[in-house]
Image (cartoon, rainbow, N blue to C red; front, side, top):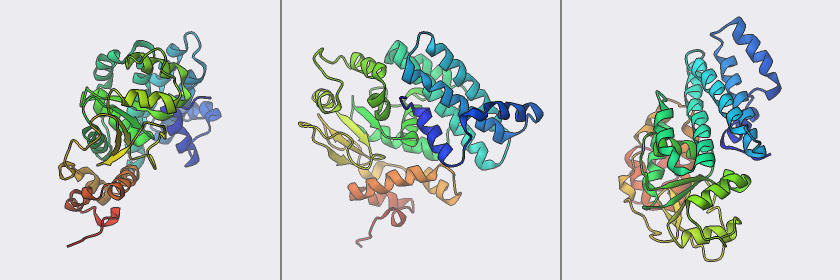
Length: 312
């Protein structure tokens, strides 16, 4: 089965003690008995996201309609969960609504092309909110990628953070975002991306041959949520700049390291935010790869815990 953005998210939550998918009926019984049961609503949302992800594996006729209906159900469940339960669970549900919206917009891209994401993103985002630490992460990643670049994302936090800022808030409309796990597992998405990038007919969908072709035309950026640059191919040379690796034209930093902001990350640390860890992991790797980022991290009180060593 292809692993979609949201099914990857669900796999992580299941490992952390989330609901088995076959328990959907029990969650419906719980919310029928108590409509303020935030935990049950949250688990229902997770389960319907998993059901929606089947679309990426099967691509059956009418599958998109079914997937969207399931994502709508998930969104409603997450909305109810965000109004009930403990603060941490409410914050989780608020973020999961954005994740479900991201999956829906990805379906729009697959079916209708990237140009459809303008109205679909802004129109569908509605009253969605996003944890400040993730919004800040998304903004930092988008700012790090050179103009007209393709940004490869690794996991749920960096993907949805950048996706929300790019398509709901219309930041950096010159960039194309590619969740690399989806590209690797979903042939329909690969074909759509190739068409939207106007790649030559002979371009292969194999990573070792395709991405050098892309990098010959425009910068390819890889989020430092990856452990290392994610594609090793002849002719593809990666350079570390703040927060991303870059290959291709203009493979240099476009924003000075001291211009990145980490205020929301500092506040998330002080408040023990449930979404802090993914941001810290990315910034820790970025500080190790690009030490010139350390003064900016230190200015927000994050330098020492992210491995920066004082030299003064």
